[in-house]
Image 1 (cartoon, one colour):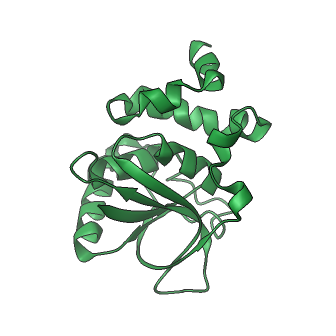
Image 2: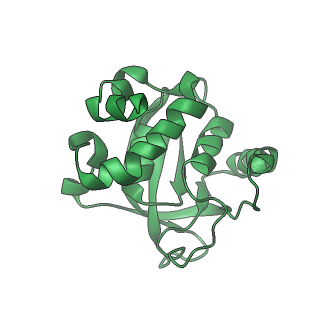
Image 3: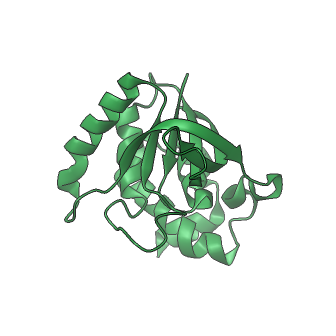
Length: 175
């Protein structure tokens, strides 16, 4: 088992995307900081995964395609586009993945690769945000479009039983 930190958009959105994948055993949602600046937290998730079932390259591809990986918008302090690595091997593999995937985007990818420093778990009542209540307006407006991208581009690694068991998403896919 390995873990990787991912940040870029709302941690509720990121949590739902990575909870929906085969080979992902656990997703912790909260606030991540790099070792270079421990007080500089932004929203993100820790993804615990089985590399034999889902590669880091695929996780990076999903991450880049399900958040604004090319937009340097005004909320970047709160929503840092980043991959938080735990080893030099992950650093190298993440850089290679970004390099391989940059042709998928019209604008340059701004996602940073940072050494993991610290993590603070979100408030317990906000964990499992999407799967607890997918009918929430926030979930329908922001999370479901990301899950639709996941099903369209990465169906081979989607836990279909979990994601398609959600009637809200099934309705969206039919539209």
